[in-house]
Image (spheres, rainbow, N blue to C red):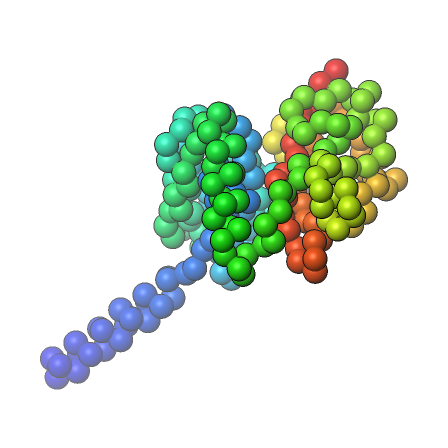
Length: 236
């Protein structure tokens, strides 16, 4: 009888473990983040809505900008832990953490070069090319004035040999506008030129708003290459 009861308890424990064990992912474009700079991170928990996911960090600030998408601003170099929890029937259940290396802005370029060298040695990775920066009006992020923004008709890619030859082209991206960290506009695009919706949204921008171009993808030799996000702060 005791053996039977022990077997039942064991089965119940295994069932509970199966129910609560849940895969989650925390990703960022570079697999490392830069201190005192805005970094895009995305989260996913299997079979859980983005509205029922809680994300925390022990280094800096997190701002939610879309479904399962956040801006992370680490305050110091070293390491940054992202803790993921889910909310089920009002209960918060911790799922685990994902650690990212945090580098200073000064060392970020070296990290990118090292990553590029490693990538070139792996045959199954993306082609060994210099990834261009996404640009708007010749700017690669930072502060932008509304008057300058309204004169822009679309996005451009930094000129690299692949871009100049026409072998690498902008494929798709998503436009986000934030007011006080809340998303007030978003649209996915497959054309570098802005459509009437985006142009109209730009006219409503005010100082303090944030403009982001995320999930930027290019096409090169039948392969999709993801570029770094482009982020602006609106000024007078």
